[in-house]
Amino acid sequence: MQSASTDFHQPSQISHQSHDELLKVAVVTDSAHLEEGRALAVDLGLPFLEQGSAVVTATPYVLHLDADGLTLISQSGSSGSISCDFMGGKLRHRHRFGGGSGQAISRAIGVKSSFMPSVADLTAGLGADAFVLAGLGAKVTMVERHPVVAALLSSGIDRALRYGDDEDLLAAVKRMQLIRGDARDWLSSLSASEQPDVIYLDPMFPERNKKSAQVKKEMQVLQALVGKDDDIADLLDEALTKARYRVVVKRPRLSDPLADRKPSFSVTGKSTRFDVYALAKLPVN
Ligand SMILES: C[S@@+](CC[C@H](N)C(=O)[O-])C[C@H]1O[C@@H](n2cnc3c(N)ncnc32)[C@H](O)[C@@H]1O
Image (cartoon, rainbow, N blue to C red; front, side):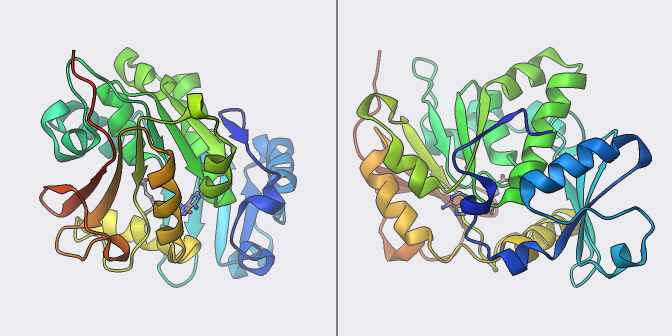
């Protein structure tokens, strides 16, 4: 299940979540995936529960493994479920009809016909933005520190690589690499030659997302699990010392810049704004 990702640290060290918070989640599988489920539970340091046991219904989150991969089911508060599916649904639709290199995220990142930047997405989440960038042709290193979110993303990548039937979408997924760990640790491990051209940040904020009810619901589940990314200003500081050309921060359209840091310029979309911190001129050929 974890083959699509690289551990930067051991699972017990990789999250800012406390052990108690993680214990809100239990791994449950169908009968065909018991062994894989047990191994996943050990890897993530989570309890493994028998399907149908009384404890399952009392657990706030169930990480369910079956032939479709991993799904996180929220059973309390913002009920709903999230999973990562690059080959179907809204991600496939966005890839086909999202507007290509003309869309706001592409202009903010600096994609050009003569230059395709390497991107480090340091707040990978479920990989939707990274997939858009990989779909444009960028190599994207994704870093995710929440073990459960990283497991969902890893499952989505594995599933796409195993069963993906669309060459174009598959090629995009192959340009994505997942690192499980805290982005600040990953950044500090980089040598000068490993610096990404562009660093991308999309921190969790409560006011975000006025999109469809479904997207909103998914975001609520993710947010309830992950919490707020309160330490994001430190990550921005670090990112500004490591990116070669620019750092891009995704913000709700009308909100203040992150940590009141005035960007060099912004690219504004329908509900989102991308604040660009330019560090050097992009290469032109
Ligand atoms: C709003 S979500 C990102 C959504 C993502 N852009 C997408 O398209 O699916 C923010 C994610 O960043 C992760 N995160 C925040 N700070 C991080 C850090 N220092 N290192 C690694 N991951 C981090 C959180 O765990 C959360 O999953």
